[in-house]
Amino acid sequence: MKEINLALIKKRRKEMRITLQDMAIYLGFKNASNYYKYESGKYRFNAEHLPLIADKLKLKMNEIFFIHNFAKIAK
View 1 (cartoon, rainbow, N blue to C red):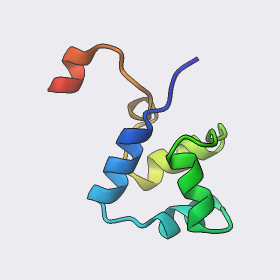
View 2: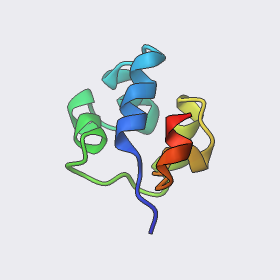
View 3: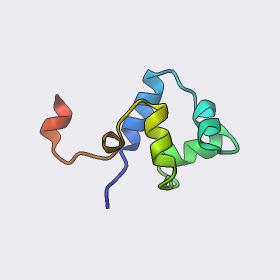
């Protein structure tokens, strides 16, 4: 099973100046606090959240998963 790169999601969200509340609304969460629990790793995103996250953050689906080849990450 692939692991979601939560640090990348958070970093990209901040780079794009998207708030926790913006993400919560986009994904259908009740509030920013609920979304934060997912982004921080307390809860796991559901499969249906992933394409929405990729779309909102202008990422390809494969980019939101960890790459275990650290040479590629360094580029």
